[in-house]
Image 1 (cartoon, rainbow, N blue to C red):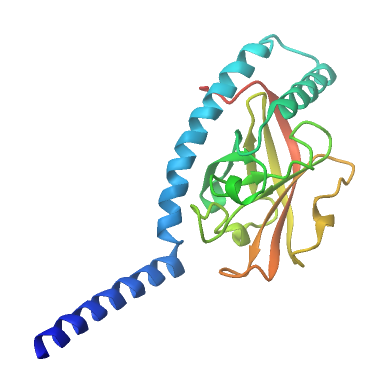
Image 2: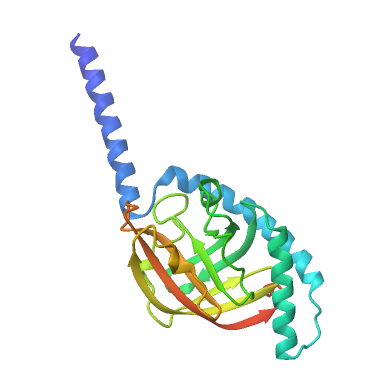
Length: 225
């Protein structure tokens, strides 16, 4: 009986230590199991994105174009790309050196899509379409791509690489809003990017919002694609 109690106590202690370790990892970084799942899905999404970049690289004329002609070309390619984008499909890559962000973006903000990576709100425009581009992402689970969005400062750079063009944004401001405030992704008369994520960490009580204005665009897929 005493031996059985000792075995039971050792088992419970071990289980407790594993649980504490898991909690510690989650608090310091992100939930580990979903992080592994997200990593696998991100690799699959990267392959999808490479295929899209190859297709649109062939579609983009490599000659020099006048500014207005280039803008029209980008808008046309964005509209075409948007019509073909499927829910959960890789559509681009978002990067921000200031917060260590470099990950594939997918189409859609449903639960399954956000498990792959940050998701584009389908009801918002795509980059190059003269409107607001809305992207949501997790902060503590499934790779936690937006873990450090609250570290952005005005003037920080965000890059969106789409198969048809690359876009550079500069952060304007950040704010915390009610989770039901859909007005944050409204059009404002110029091209901008809005990032949204739950706030504070480990809670969905509010939303942390990053607003960034588009300052430069380049026709064609990312260099090296």
